[in-house]
Length: 69
Image (tube, rainbow, N blue to C red; front, side, top):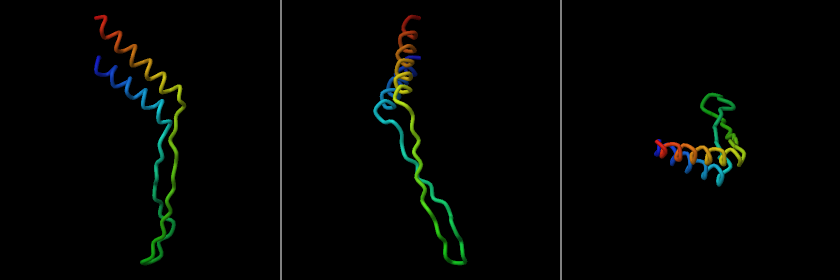
């Protein structure tokens, strides 16, 4: 449980610092014989900052609860 709590703490801190990331996908628009036309589409995957705080607090709770046993 100690390792899981530490991992949650680091993930929570990272989620508070980085509010999301971009994902680029490539889609085929047209395929006419030997000619192929592709389009790149960028999507943003984001989460609110308070979610990182909740994960951080959850990691601290797991870490403290693991020490009491």
